[in-house]
Image (cartoon, rainbow, N blue to C red; front, side):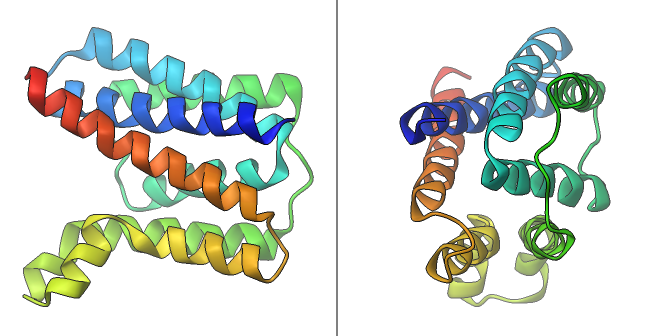
Length: 175
């Protein structure tokens, strides 16, 4: 798959993921949160089945959030079911358990750090590091530097993160 198409899928996934969460968490809008969650599931699943590197990232985000108990709404369950159905129909790429575990630990660390670090320290660097979930970014970059991932997948992941933050800004502006 072209990295341009993959970047678009990452962008859409990040945007839909954040907007869906904000709709549910802030507005209690289950209907539109679920619709955007389904869109997120569709684009994330297509990226997953067509790119092994995307599979590591999206599965790690999913499993890391699940372990961190962040799958906390019916919209998440609907999204999860749609994602799994699409991946089962089209097939998961073959994955290395070690690389997947590294990515899961990074995603989990981001979620736990995002929730807890500001409670335990006033360190500006640590607070910003976990506020913007940099563990996964660093891990994906390191995997790219060592040739395990292509550097383009790192840029795709950055596009996901930019779209995620942009969705939060858009939501706040129109809320």
